[in-house]
Length: 504
Image (tube, rainbow, N blue to C red):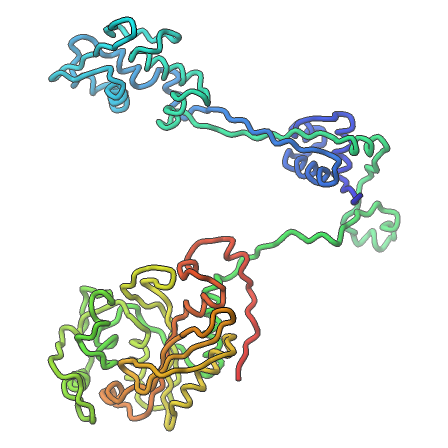
C-alpha cells in the first residue's frame, strides 16, 4: 500500500474512534477546515481506507422582497383587502402594491374594471357560486375557488416545497430562491479500521529542512516526510501573451531580422491612397459598398494628385492607356476603413521615392464580409515592400520563400495570379501535412501605373498575406472566430514556446 500522509493518518486515527462523521465535526476534532478534511478523505479513499459520501440537499430561501411579503402578504393579497364596493381605480393605484398586485389579481380572474370602478368577481366552485366580499385568507380552505388560489400562493410562500407548482411560480417572480447545500459524510472502511487499530505513527513530519537542521545534523533523526516521485505535480498556468499575438510578434521579429523596418498608419484612410494611388478604377467592384466600409468624413487630396488622375484617364506620360472614362475628385476624397495595409505602404513610397526601401506593416483591415469559419469583417494583414536598383521577380520569390521557411513551413511553391496593381503577380502556397497545399497570400511587382505618378523610377516588390490564416494553421484551428474567443482552456493549453525558426 502507498505511504500515508501525516494528515491521512490523523484522519484515520479519529475515524477509528468515530467510525462515521460529517466533515464539519471532523474539522473541529482535527482543528482544520472542512475542505481539508474532504481532501484528506479522498486521498485515503484512493487507498481503500475511507469512503466519502456527498449529500446534496435543496432548500428555499427568501429574497429581500420575499421577506417583506412574508410579513405583509403577497401584493395581490394586500390589494384584495383594500378593494370594497365602490372602490375607484384611481384610489387603488395609490396603493404601494398596485403595480404588481393588480396584474396578479387580473391574471387570476379575481377583479374586473367597470368604468372607473374596480369590482371583485364571482368565483365558480363545484357546489355553486361564491362572491368574494370579505377576503378571508385563512389557509387550509377549499382550494378549488379562485379566492383560494391566493390562499394556495400564501401557503406556498410560508411553506415552500419542491413538489408545489405554486412554489415554482414564486421562484419565477423572484420571491423565493432555490439554494443547494452540499455536505460530506466520511466513514472508515474495515481495512482503514484495521490499520488504525494496529496503531499509526502520528509524530510530526518534516517536509522542508532548515539550515540549522542541516548544520547540526538533527535531520538524521527527524521524521522525514516521504514523497512519491512517480506522481505528477499540479499543473501551473502562468500568465502569458495570447497565442495569436505571439504569432504576430514572431512575424514582426522575423522581418526585422531580415532587415525590414516597420510602418504604422491609421485605420481610417482616404480612398485616394486606399484605391486610386494603387491604380484601382473608381468603378472597380472592390470599391462597392458590399466590400468597403465608407465613412462620412472626407480629406483634401494630396499635392500632385493630378498625375494619378491623368494615369487613370489616359495613362499620363507612360505607355499605358489608363482606364479611360471619368475620374471624380469627390470619390477619391472620401474616407474608408482601410481594406488593406497597402494604403500605408504606398504613402511611405510617396514620401521616400529613392532607394533603398525595405519595409513592412502588420495591421488590422476591414471588409464587409459575411462572418463564418474562415471569414471575418476585420482581420490582420501583413504587407511588405522592397525597392532598390536592380531588384527582380526572383528576389521576390527568395524573400517569400525565406519568410515562410522561418515561419516553419518547409514546402513553399508559387503559381501565377492576377492583382490590379502588380504585374507580374503570383500566389504563394505552403504545404501542410494532412491538408495539402494552402494559399497564403499574393505578391508581385508594382505596375508602372502605380509607381510613375509618385516619381518612382525603380522596381518595387510587394507582397501581402492574411495573418489569421497562418495562425489557424499553426494553432490547429478550424474556425477563425476561435482566435478572438475568451476561452481560458484554449489559452492554457496552447504552448508558450515557438518552434525553432527555419530558413534557407
